[in-house]
Length: 335
Image (cartoon, rainbow, N blue to C red; front, top):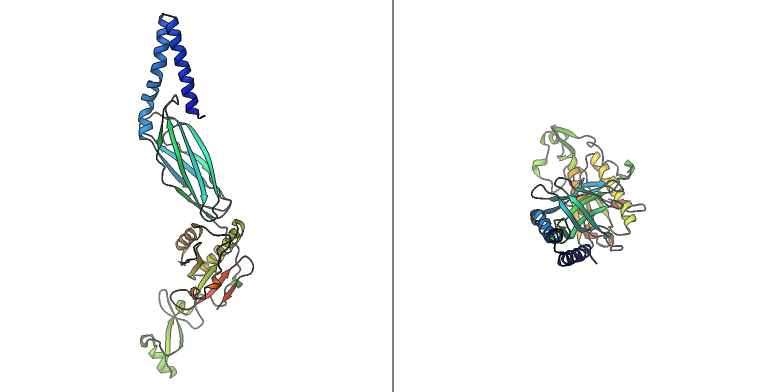
């Protein structure tokens, strides 16, 4: 039996008692008690009606991102017209990790809900992933709990639960990848560094360094230093248990930040749960955050196909690349 049904039964018994008392006692007190029992529900509804009709629920994550096992919070706020607080509000919440699929539900009851006083709830941050909070079965009640109104579900809130970057030693990076400029590079202007090499068939004529070519008696080509370096392609097989995914993503984030620290753009490649490839370029922290959101925001199966089964995918866009495969044990570099 619901709480509102119990209150209605109690009210009905109270009203019946007042009516019986009025029938058996023709005096002022009996009339007053009966009138009071009849008026109280109407008074309660009149005081609550504006807030019940106009209130709206909103969900938010604060902060919007947290490290795994860190402190993540949800804020449940209610926009109430007028100045009177709501007597009571009940709802059911569902928190789902979109990466692991883990879901937990809980029922909440909020009494004396006032404006600008959001409820603060803990968010699950035990595993990496995008955690989504939804609310449904939302009801708001009058002061006596005899009347209620169902509210529409608000838009969901999302919390990015980030991996903890593993320490990635520089030896994992191929030799020369992190060099600020190749040996013999020529600086042509602010931010422009060129490497010099012999002409190869197919090179554009505009890339020929005519002055040095005439001096060295052979065709010399200018090539941008960053273009001369291959683009790192980080790959991972995105499946496993939640704990295995945590360790895998820790290694990936550590390696990605190690590449950014030495100024090397790269790309991250993985297969989605439906087998479709997903490629994210990463050249700065903003693109890394966007990549993490995409990587952690869809379901990862317990088992799945490995990227090695699709060799046609293992090529970064825009030119030569080499692959760094991120795995729980070992991993490796393919030139």
